[in-house]
Length: 127
Image (tube, rainbow, N blue to C red; front, side, top):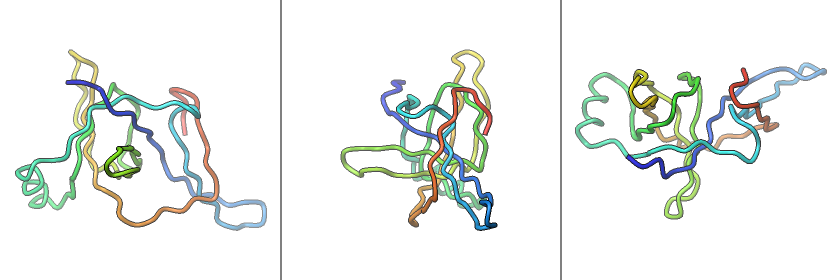
């Protein structure tokens, strides 16, 4: 398996500014100018049908080196064919002790996302 894709992982954080207005932040789990290497594949027809029966919308699978990822995060991936695509994390399969990877399943986000600010974290930093 080749980790040949560069992805970015972020979380949406909603807070209030000084005047009490809602502020929506796109907060990355890594520093600015960096990416995370991943293996990506679209889910097979069999996997899509199995997940429909369990009421999960899964369209893509990412294999990455272990990170602190939760189901409320999003993954950005860029390809020359499709441009930038965003997947919402739907499931995280267990840590493989032998090769230190986790498999993350995601659903393609089709609506436009809007943010008031973009924030970057340090490696391993908490959000």
